[in-house]
Length: 356
Image (tube, rainbow, N blue to C red; front, side, top):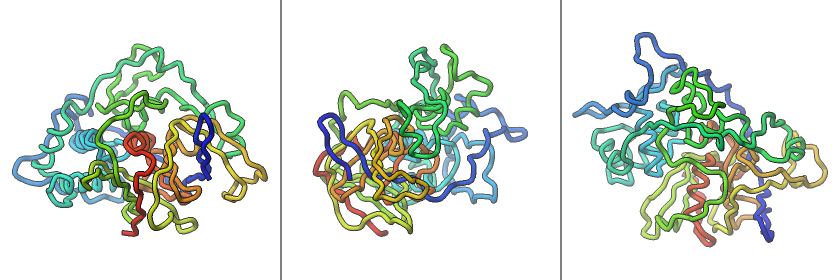
């Protein structure tokens, strides 16, 4: 269970993935004859006038090259707080569901098609450009970094921090991107050299510390955890949908709870405490142990404690897998989405677990 201590709220339930995915695809290669994926190409991408863009039928093997229009739309969705998960420029389930959720919020039905009207709404809400230039600083490279993170939780407890492994990983997560997309947009550029100018998603950069000031609006009054669609929706006091996040929610072995709960508290940059009574597979420790804070901590950068004993909504060290894998019962979001939700809820915020 999570306990409140004078200086910190420690999460005690871990929601690690139970099903491993295939290895992430290698850095995308340019398709024969296609122009390079550049800042200008993506920022100029628009849907064809007069017709909706139908979602592509997914082939047996996903296309190598990210789509400029999908990439631009993902950035606009992220800015509107309708998260497509890790931005990658591809038409996956997280992208389609975020597009449909945004369409519903705008009174345009639940379409997964990118229409000119829907795109115009996104542009009006999110502005331009979608991709921007960023100069890597000495402070970025100061870390601290944790080059090697052992898989066994008991071994992780010996580390002084669970930081990013590399500047590349840090930059990708800061700008809500898959590392492979960062590579495609910045071929042959060194991410470990101050002064390097790189192309990144034009989103609010994610920090790793507790925010100095929390947003005043929109205040979230109700959170719906949708088990079947693997999503978390946030509503304001007038029951308007104001945010959408893809999520990993429970498993057959340990399903997420049902019914209603409330937010008890929020911890930014938390430690994680393992209790042997959880009996996680592969963990042989017979006594409690703690894992230090950091973005690669088992519960990521945020823990939103719920009134259901040992359950919470939290971040993850594996953002690419959100919405695609299972968990040990809790609700996992990307670190940036968990931080966003945490900044808009408060003790007493209602949380409902919905089967459909």
